[in-house]
Image (cartoon, rainbow over all chains, first blue to last red; front, side):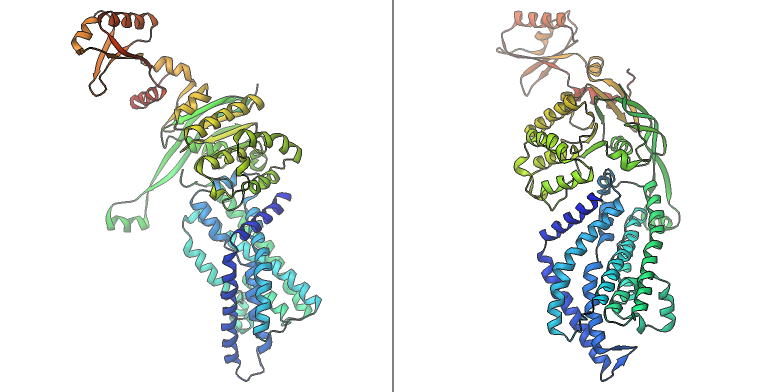
Amino acid sequence: MDKYLEMIRIRFLMMLAYRTNYYTGILIYSINIGAYYFLWSAIYGGKEQIQGLSIAQMTTYVAISWMARAFYFNNLDREMAVEIMDGRVAVELIRPYNYLVMKMMQALGEGIFRLFLFSVPGLVIVYFIFPIHLTWDIAVWGLFAISILLSFFINTQINLLTGITTFFLFNNSGLIRAKRVIIDLFSGLILPISFFPVWAQNVMNYLPFQGISYIPSMIFTKGFTAQHAVYAIGQQFIWILILIVPIQLLWNLAKKQMVIQGG
Amino acid sequence: MSNAIEVKNLRKEFKVYSSRKGLKGAFRDLFTRNEKIIPAVNDINFMVKQGEMVGYIGENGAGKSTTIKMLTGILTPTSGHIVVNGMNPHKDREKFVQTIGVVFGQRSQLWWDIAVQESFRLLKKVYKVSDEQYDNHMNHVIKTLDIEPLLDKPVRKLSLGQRMRCELAAALIHNPPLLFLDEPTIGLDVLVKLKIREFLKEINEKYQTTILLTTHDLSDIEALCERVIMLDEGKVIYDGALHHLKETWGEGKEVHFQFLETVDLQSVKAATAGLPVKWEHDEKEQVFIAYIEDQDELISQLIAQIVAAYKIKDLNIHETSTEEIIRNIYEKGEVRLG
């Protein structure tokens, strides 16, 4: 376990080495939140509520979704693709650790870095510009914390799965891009799931994506009742367990027919 | 003494798709591809004892790296039997890699953006090395390789020679009984090469570390290894002592003469008539080269006769270099030695 914790620390250090990237990142996220805020203000017009969400809740939803994204989002799939394509994965395989767990820990290090040096200051900035209602209910914060941690795992597992496909496809940049769009759309980042048509909502109930963004954001904006929140967290947890299966299967298959590229 | 490496009938095949010519061919490739199975490693057998230093040589594409990757558990063999350090490398991978160290000359295993000592610290945790062990062992390694001043620099700022020394130290953090070096001196200058060789000799003596070394630089092998395994097209074509290779395949000696007076080839030949000598005249260097069998008697006789006939400016005796021997072997493509 020690080695995995150490990896989180190392990744944190690496991110610090390139911290200037993140100042621009905060700006970009703030602009995104602003754009969605104005868009939603126009859509709401004078209406009190749409689909059970008030305009204030909607603004908070948008802000919190983007800030949570900074935590759960990572480029693990792309990193793995590069490592596999130029053969660096060979070095990873001569180390006494589980490559996939180690990758996940690196992502966690990155996520923690972003949470403290990006999401928190970003949220403070956004709080002063837009009418956001932050709750002071400890229970909500607690459920939210559990929920975004789980959404980190779901998102990272999907990234691992995409990354492993590089072993079979050799060049999967198209798949990586498609995956990113699907997650942004189906996770409820761009549009809350409750705004989708009912048949689409039904389909999405059977997909893991809403566990990435929709559930934590709804918990935070109190769009869910406490009971519903606990149920949703349970759902996230089950998805994490289910996703382990295809990852292990593909990984075992990949190891068997691995070709190390480039000498 | 036990064997560090045992390899029996090891084989690795790769599927290769060849593409057809032209646009029409490209369309046909969409549906059916020409598939060929190429054995990169073709039924090889060898054993390495604990504490041995073995040179593993061969041309590019002979299958050296593929073998190393199977021995380190990265690749799964198509068929055959491998036991390294008493374990099957790809079965109990995590336990197995704890007992080996690997240096890939063309690939860094340090983390690019962080200081060398941070990489060391992480590896120390990864290999579960205790502080005490680390201090005992690594302080010495760091001193011998002279990398103390590099420890707080990020890897990307190191020169190739500096980086290689750090890589070597990183591979030894857990003091493994077996070390794989895949072209460790590629692109390094003479001083760094010498330092690395000395260091390898030292750890081999001190800890009985087994070392399997692949390289294109035969001077590495000459300096370090008593035994070589030579590979060609996936097959072992020679496995035995380096000096034996030289004795059997070294084609005599060359004696280079430079004369004070003008001499022509004819008269030199006449002066040594009766001796089994082949003469050559290098016009550019103004050197006469005598090729002669490697017998002390013959050589001194040759020199005596020449000195008696002409005034000499310079005289050199050359042995056929290992490099030439190996080039000969590959050109002839047939070796049936020990």
